[in-house]
Image (tube, rainbow, N blue to C red; front, side):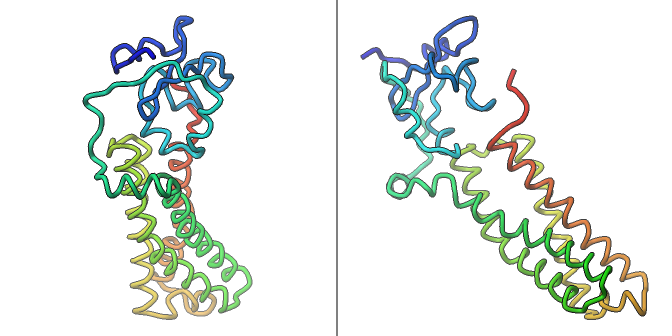
Amino acid sequence: MKEFNESSLKKFNGKDEKKVYIAYKGKVYDATNSKFWKTGTHMNIHNSGKDLTSEIFAAPHNESMLERLTIIGVYKDPSQDQRIPNWLNNILETHPTLKRHPHPISVHLPLAYMMGSSLFALLFLIFGYKSFETTSFYLFVAGLIFSIPAILTGLFTWWLNYRLIPSIHIKLKILFTILVDLDALALLYMRVREPTVFSSIHTNVHCLTYIYLILILLLTPLTAVIGYNGGELAFPTKKSK
């Protein structure tokens, strides 16, 4: 079979009516006739003419989609990434779900909890039921707790699948994660120091009450930014140029 390296493979990127070749785990596949690679780019994020091993690790699907393509060569890369130790690589090969899914699974819990906290705060404002205020409090505390595994798996995924490249979406995710947790920590401090800081809003309003209300409502737009940028990493809406 024909051998390809980084230099020879990049010529087959689907542009100017060229063929579409992609490499994965040392094999080169012909994706020219695939409807998913018509422009040489898949899902606006995966470009052809290159080794996609690490990118397919990060994709929502697995390598089985490559079974539809024809293997036309082997890929030789002497500078192949050696970051992943053998013991970790063995675990990832045995449990391929760990290559991608721990972060998407873990991140949805704190996002939902934080947004739910804002929702129940609004319900308390409207209906005045103390249970709504208590639920709002427990939800952002749960969001704080579950943000720990979400952050750890996010950092792991960033290292494994994105090689710690600080793209704009990753930068925004990190920034707004910090803002959300600082927001929730401030709320926790105020609520513990003064348990009635928010529950007394219908009878005794003071400055801290309004600050608490603003901070708890901010949880929703802040977490929405995190969710949006996470979605852009997996399913970008902008077409690659």
